[in-house]
Length: 119
View: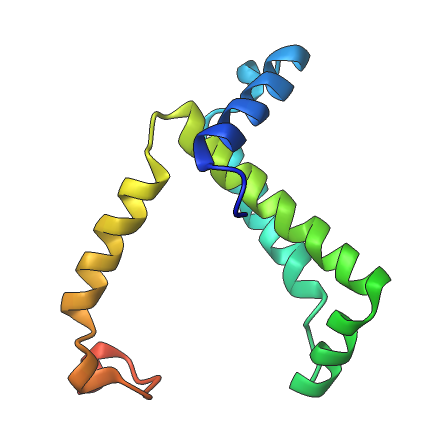
């Protein structure tokens, strides 16, 4: 994470997909569907597990690699959607964090998991 920027990741994914002629299959809807499926596959690793069981799983190198692979798949499709649709991920994240900063002011939400409309 300290040595690679988002544009480098986008470029690597683009080159990977270009070599396979996958642009024809990668419209926003198909990529969003794939992203959702991969997020669900990540969630499978945590379903019905306690916090302690999750901690133990993440300490197991094999399980941690499996979870890391699912996280990579989620990142791949997220980056691919942004790369295919000219979305600057850093800009989008910063804009969303600014919105959330206004929606969830620290003085009201620090240490709370309540929804905004519950206040």
